Image 1 (cartoon, rainbow, N blue to C red):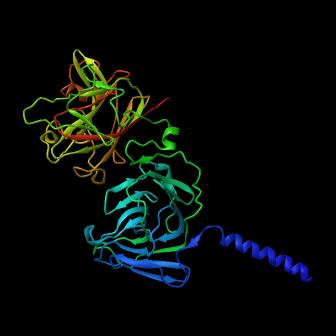
Image 2 (spheres, rainbow, N blue to C red; image 1 turned 120 degrees about the vertical axis):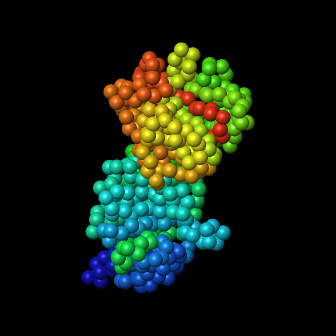
Image 3 (tube, one colour; image 1 turned 180 degrees about the vertical axis):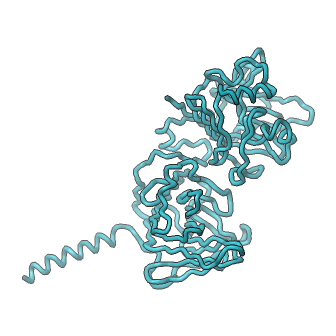
Length: 448
């Protein structure tokens, strides 16, 4: 009997050892907030049994209960229950430094969003660039979050790869190299004075792995890649390729058919830029186009404007009687360039189909001059076309539709037979004489 008892005791102890050696470390000790510190606002945080409870307070900035320790590569899991009218988030690889906006917390945040927008699990860059990965890019994941119930969040940060899950459903896949290490924090969002204070969010089972990390198997969702001219393994698998290699003029020529311009364009540090011309001077470089033509495709590109700059990316580009023309995704400083007020109902503004159809102006899709923007054009095999800006669809139209043809007939392209309706064409980057920067130009073919 003693031998049998000893046998089962050894089995039990072995099971405990396996559990303790699984690599998970609890970030909350179940008693108090040792190892954590309050940053930002003055929302309240309490340790209550196996939970940490955050409570909103009026007239105070965003509040953060942050770990004393910083983390680089890790896998984090936490369960949370939030008030259904409460916005919150989990900071990671985040920082608070006196030299940055007087200590403002900034860095990546996994969103908690019970609202109708349903962006829970998306990645927001708190205090810096804003939304990096919203759920318009992965709408199937909008139903992952359960309102008025406990939700399991998972974050995998390994190298430049940042991936998130809500209740086992893959939500976001971000590739970014801005911040490699920082603290983890539980956010209680600021509230206006008109909103009742005292709403709560609860966190439990907060645990982390930092050694011998094994990333989850790839999930076929949209990838937002912020690393210059980089193609992740999943992007390659999805069919993307670089349309510009980031270092040479290979695959591109001047729009007039001559070799790539020796003046007017510059390649430096993986960035292709249009050089600014002197006032009244004719553009030195001129437009440049791809060697190849494309029909149905998804095109992603990053651009950065300087003040009052004007440029564009054109697609279905062809030679129409000596004029190289195409449908144009407008790239423009709306605030400072007069062309934004020309045309009809804003059809020459940022991300519009130039002089034909206006884009929607959605505040969190717009970034300031001198900040990088991510644009996307989708041309489906059925001729439906979409313009995207920083993860938001801002325009949709149907080539060959009656409305499309009517808009062309009212534009500067009226009377140009076949404009915008041909089966395929080249991609063009416009030299409008203003300094504009391009990078990470990628394309994949879309098939029926």
